Length: 428
Image 1: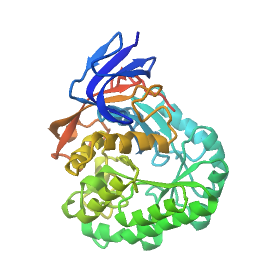
Image 2: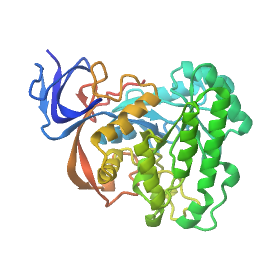
Image 3: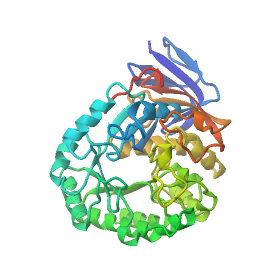
């Protein structure tokens, strides 16, 4: 007797969508069978034509707690995640105070999150000047990898690494098989915006700055024999050096984000869409979609980086750079993906399987026996209009207010239990 069986004629399994019954026992997927042959269970849910996806894994979330909890916090961020079909997040090490750059700081972060999370939460550590000796301890304490910046991060307590510091950090994490995540913008090619508008902001962070930084990261990873990951790729010009490095045996992966796949510079009018690196032109957006289809980009994750509304001023030169989309990532990406002929299987690979693999979350990312029973009932044909008041993150600033999207999350299960009620998330 199983605890739960969820049936769907469109279950997205690792080998493709099919009719299936997914059985759950003790929080894990215990059996898979045909849609018309469900095993016995204490509870049965029949979704019919509503799709069943693996719970999404978002490896790029700025929760900001403790220290900047008025921007975002574990309770609000994870409630938004659950509402959007995300069952696991990996918290970034910066914007919280203290930043997660020592094992002690990671313990502070875990204490802030304990008992408050509606989905499972893992943590990245940070690499900053002077903490090379802390990286192994962070790794042993459970950090899934290490984030660093080559340019200013936007907060004083998380400074960038210079060329020597980057090489030293790569060399250290190579000794214990860690992962380095590098915000790739070359500071030498960044300038102050010449005015308050979006064109001036975009010009201040050119594609060349992103590509040169990617090339630096690839060279450092090759020299150290270490794994590297490029987050939030906004410029399609970065794809060629990433693909070339992989062919040459360098262990480098890359992600992009919903805002780069949905928005375009020609349409941006408000600072809710400001982020670093910036959203670029429509032609570049289409090139990113081609790179995703070809496998040059492996993950689509949110880079959820909220702030209080007052920091999103009308001036693009001074407004906080971050897009809040944790709750909306699945319908945002699906709306655009289906127009381009992509499948729900592609969505599961980009937004669940690959991010789980990146963070070493072996129990996540697929509807397969033995995995955690993290599941999403997703109605791919239903439509809705985004309303900021419906969003659960702490400060519901969004560039998507009023946008019509296709695909509605009907239910989210975390280890076989409906998510979003009492906090039931585990710290991984």
